[in-house]
Image (cartoon, rainbow, N blue to C red; front, side, top):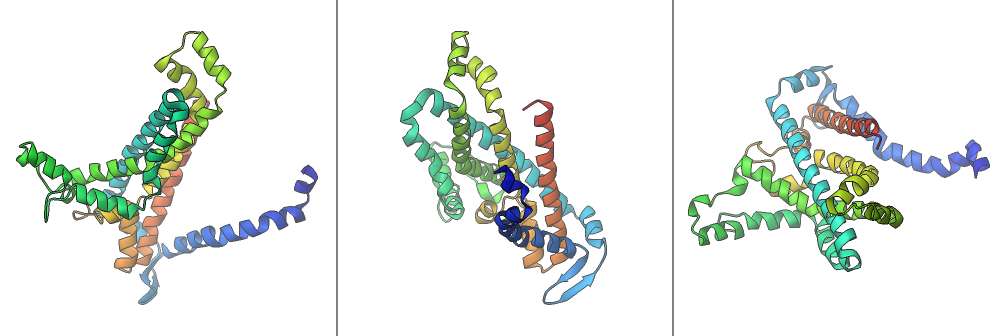
Length: 294
């Protein structure tokens, strides 16, 4: 094996096609998009070189800063929810349900494989106010809280929480399974030795299980943050970024700028800032994990 790895021609034959495909599918579009950031226009109207104008416009664009703040706030809230609930479910599977957890795991994982649009439509119906009350408003009306009945998705503050809860519920099963695989890899002897030393319940989880599970937890956090920073389909299906731009993240703002208003150059500049944000978050997590010895 070592001899094969030293032969650059063998490496080129085995790895070359995959690298070429990766470059064509991922790297070339990134470089292409990077080039668009110094132009304005569209394929129909033509492109004009504008230098750093798109970057200067970005600094003065209040909608961009609003979308950046919304995306960051959303990513922090949803990622924390997905990993914390996923971890709680994984601990439940491993230490309480054990072999009988198969059915629970299947039920919790089910939302992961459901189409996002179908899940979003279900939440739209749950929180509907017209043409008839959805389940939430019906329950509030039934218990006499008519004053609490409202257009939940028609207000930015309440729409944010509904989008967040929906995405946490939809993805926490995935993180539960991911963290459960890490729990299964912890040697049973280590757990038993800790129990013999008197560690039980939260003490066992805090000082033995969580430190051993830290690498998988960090990986889950990176997956989740990168996924939630790039959220698109769930918000498009649930609120389309509204009301106004109250629930518009950078992805949706970039999409509308490029494909609705035909400003490919400015849209590419927004996409570049999103890529840099994802890279920065990943590097920060790696740096923090390395400092803590994870």
